Length: 200
Length: 366
Image (cartoon, rainbow over all chains, first blue to last red; front, side, top):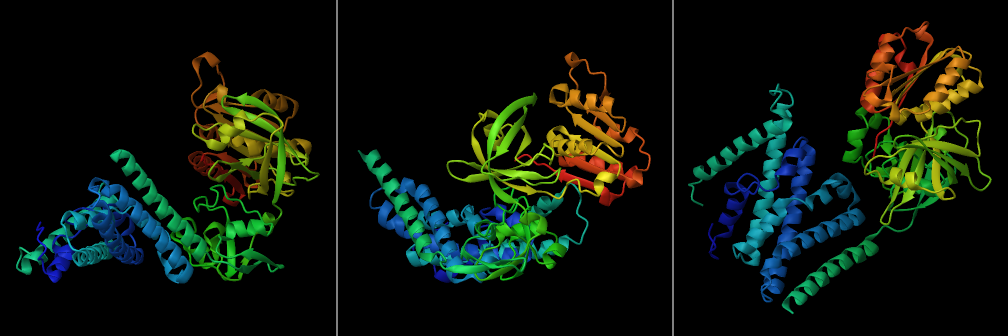
């Protein structure tokens, strides 16, 4: 992966969302992807929430890392700081929605706290720092990753609706078939990349 | 020096984050009061922003909540007529679509944001918050103790045989609730007894097992739909218990004994080995002195040294071998682990007992 600072933002967005999709290429955030994709509506909400949280936490983590940890040469504490920031941001967001947007809060319900432990969020924040993106690039990368994850969970949920009506081999079970669906979608995503000319 | 600095920095950072969350919690918390109307009665003023379960407790209505309000036991079911928040995913797991359509909700999952109107089963309104003092504690079988409590402060516990109550236990970080069936007859109103099995890793059961007489506990109750009604007492009765599931059935049996065993009563008690079987002597004596009462213990894994000559196997297998005259009139009470209750229910139905006359009370270890 390039560490260059000169990647066009649109390319970065597309790469993060499709060709190097956080779920299908890096296998991050797989647990909610499999458990929540049983329901399309819930998947949509979860994906949206992941997008929002990813944007906020990546920005917050970028600032903390570049303006607090790096000057003090404490980059090795990244993980600890990032995890705490994500937990705090999710808590704050939960309180905020509960107070000002109760209807949205109720729609998300249990999914909001679940995001705290979504490794895709942590992964994206760490990638952004590791690849030495600027703040704007980090935000674009986070947005792309979030949208990509959202897209994938919605696609898997849509396919699973059809699967519910078919006979799945017993030993494959719900999880097994979902993994297979994810694999096929991953192939499709890499196919799109090739269509676009590849080598993005 | 550097290490110390790092530790300080981490602590300071986490402290700032926690302070931020706590502060915003204070700042963003919903304030004010809302009206809570129960069963079209008087409106109670309760704090906004909390869930319905503690709000109801504020209004003097104590719902059963074996999970302590986490939305996992499904016992705090109420009907929300108006003003409820949206249905949460936890509720869709525990309540069927038909239930939800009929406005059923779990009180612990409903958040109070506006004036709210609910309906609660009348029987639940009888539940009270009481203080009970442990009078005696007796080991009756391996890991099972019978605890005798007395009610404090001129209060009475009015319950029906077969019902259960909840015990509050204050842990350093949270208050937990556990449900225990009452094993004493309902004729005693100023006290009750509980049969408590110690569960490995069980916080409350371990606490109750080491409790010394004289200690006071907070309880609420009575709760439960499995009980001996006045009408049922006039039918032949089959009692089937698995392990410590005997507790509510002991209460029912005592009531039937007081009534003089007007109709035949069969008690089936399944346990792992003889050391898990309790009240055996008492039931054997009772069966000797009363013709209409019959006692059938069965052990699934009797130990060699116990010299058990009685029935072996699972309790539903023993039940299967028995013949019941007039099975259609029988009322059955079944209490034990869920798989045992399912097996027993199946056998009872096959014997001709009407499924709506089979009353069950699952006990789940938690």
